[in-house]
Image (cartoon, rainbow, N blue to C red; front, side, top):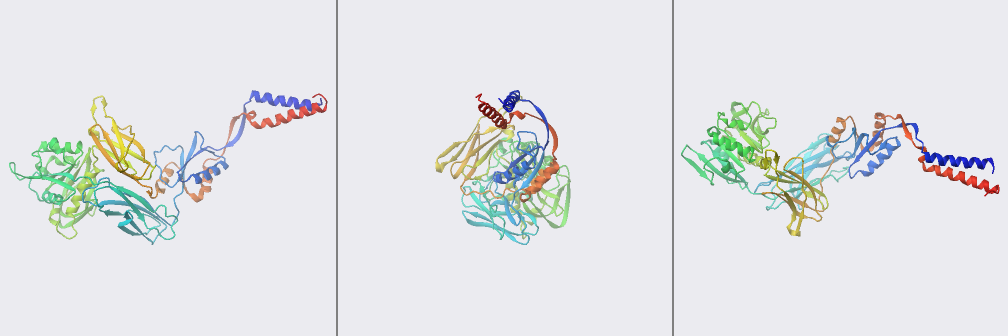
Length: 579
């Protein structure tokens, strides 16, 4: 055999021996850190293109661990506590200007008899200065309310509120639509569906006039006769004389207050210590709302319920118009608290933003205090909203207090197969407990559609917070469902509308996307500048020379020279007559 054949044989043997020994060789190379890409469900193609660009730049994309940065691809906002690793960068895929996007539409969770529901809408305009947008609320395709706005800034947010009184007592679904402008980049984000709840019973209200006072008298008259309120009243003219209407209790105790949701108290300076203790329990544990309507500067202990220690009395020559979340009233005799809780909700304030009527959450309930002592005097003036103010203030505060078992669903209007998140929350005051543990009864939940004869169990799991359960549910078919939850002796319900054509409006939230990115040291780039994002990452994470152990013999390509060498050796042996 020739020398060439011998060399081929021993070279093949050397390759086989090296493969068996699998030597570990340290090799220097340039390397960039790992990057994780988190795409939105609708932005997979954009994320894939970005991944290719990062790999071409030398980055490792979506490695198992050790990423130095996270890239959010999408238009939706991000949460600061979402657990992203490293610096957060973002590629914003929200539509470019000009565009109008309906970002949010909500209806109240509680609907009172004969009360219009308020649909609150958030509309974002970008690059539409000088143009006008009309927002329309539609019920079964019929326009029932509208509002119009002319845009004045390049980037602007408009938050209209529209009123609508649905016919009947059942819940339903409304569509909120922003009429498309000419040359908008997209119309996919111009509509959103919102579900409104079925009508509940009237607010059970007790009016206690501890003395004959004009403010409490006319506050009571503002509520009487309204379908949204069921009023019982007692007026104590003296120690032994009282006027009653609607079956009020003889005394204020925990047992007599428990059936009510709201207690309106006039002349609160005349309350006894036992009355105050019962009202304190009513607010903090029962979850009720106490409305304090004094007619003079406070001299009793009842102000302790509000957390305010001192008031400044004012007498004006002309009545001031007090405006706030509940509307507006006129008053010339004012009680202005010198300091209120940061969590206080201002219901009516002076032109200088000094609170006069305000509410404070306390325990499970809330307390409202009116410092507009003579607002009743001006109730008949033009544009005065005394009655409307008190109806809305009390109804809103009563609706904000959760029931003993509060059941919520998100979203309340969904498509078949879409995930609906169900949360059941038992009021903390109702939790049965012992000194060393909290005992919570078993829970059962069902999604019921009587029309389709559907009764589907919903599995709820306890969370880290005692008395709170969460779960997910998907409806297979369209219809009106009721998610019913039973927890011991407590019951709670939430309505869900499932329809094929449900839309949720825009999910774009560039502001929160930018907030999370900048808080971590990253930046946000528009979707058409993905190459600039790659360049920024190159500058932020330059390639570094590192030494990594390598196993060169593990490459499958070594099979090729091994086979060629053996073939050459066999061919030479055959020519030499040795094969």
